[in-house]
Image (cartoon, rainbow, N blue to C red; front, side, top):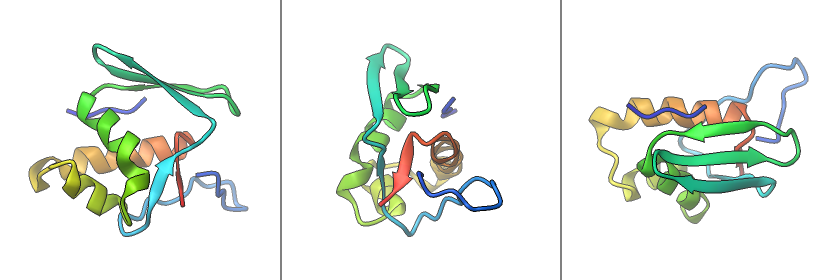
Amino acid sequence: MVCAGSTDRATSGSPPELDLSRPYELDPQVALRHEPFGALAYHYGNRRLNFLRSAELVRLVETLGQHPSASMAMEAAEIGPERAGSFEEALRSLLSSEVIRAR
């Protein structure tokens, strides 16, 4: 199981929606520290600490900005359809925590 502990905010205060057809990237205010379990992601702007509990998720987050869409990044990371749902949920959580953002 994959677990993750946009700067665009809707005016209603609701979290941004993840759209796998859009490009995303690691927020430049986030530092990743690799750990045996995956990585710690610290956001210097909002001071949140998130845990990325999978090395595969860390690689996906680190390479998001190199692909024209999140789904293409998942494909390049060889995340199969049987596991795509858990990675999508992790990306949704990371977007809500502002670890990743839409490009």
